Image (cartoon, rainbow, N blue to C red; front, side, top):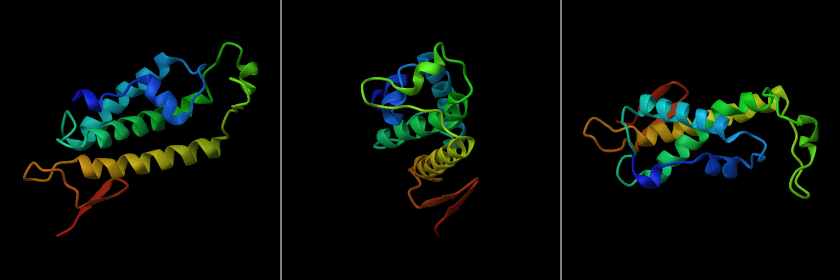
Length: 140
């Protein structure tokens, strides 16, 4: 993986505006899961040339789709105080429906990015693929 395609827990935290109380170790664990899932989904171990940003975004959205269900279930020290953090920004726990909606949105974006990142038979990125859930259609 190229340096530009590396993603850190801090970048994931910033992308999703996660509060500092979400443990970095939790984000890092789900980032590892996302890296493994991305390699499995694309069949390549690193970002294809010129697609570093797409690779990094795919890692980010996959990690967030993996971690979102846990964000409402882990026990934070002082969880009752999470209502108001960092000045005027308010955080709250998501409803199960909101979690499901977020995960679905993130998973859809991940699948779109996988379609772009998956090489065609000639080894080039397959930019003419459309992802439909677990099915991929290629234009002829």
